[in-house]
Amino acid sequence: GQNIDQPTEMTATEGAIVQINCTYQTSGFNGLFWYQQHAGEAPTFLSYNVLDGLEEKGRFSSFLSRSKGYSYLLLKELQMKDSASYLCAVKLDYKLSFGAGTTVTVRA
Amino acid sequence: ETGVTQSPTHLIKTRGQQVTLRCSSQSGHNTVSWYQQALGQGPQFIFQYYREEENGRGNFPPRFSGLQFPNYSSELNVNALELDDSALYLCASSLVLAGVNEQYFGPGTRLTVT
Image (cartoon, rainbow over all chains, first blue to last red; front, side):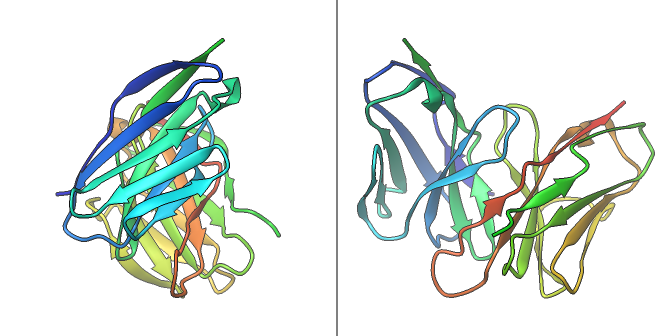
């Protein structure tokens, strides 16, 4: 089976920085995705890493270390609208294998 | 550009019944994947269709079946519904080319089995 682990919940203050870690042990690897999902809505694409290193996209950055089976999503200058579930997903050939998601709550 | 759409939005069925969920892929996309998301969990891959053929399947029993049509829209059929089938069913479309193959998700169908 595929193991993709991420923390269940995180809480942070508006304007702060939060780092969501994801570790994976999978039978293959064709890249790692991060998705944001608000309650009752579809997941929306945030970032994609296939090579080691940091990808920056505005307030969101994602890092990958393939040798360590590790990724993180960094959310800077948190806003209330960032309260959501963040899903880490490993691409395996034709499918995505998801972690259970990390619920981030941003407090004023 | 039209995004991924799914119908119906919500559905309530009784155990043992059959259900059909529908998905229209994003314009220009030729691949559709279906996922089941139980409450508090990440999406679980059911299967994928590429050019009207099943292209891969997750750990779901045969009573989960699907179709893809020439216009790349798709259906998910579930027979003999069980209580554990209650979940959000997500459809995602993508364009199979070299590169990211990012999947775009629809809003989902919330299925409740009683």
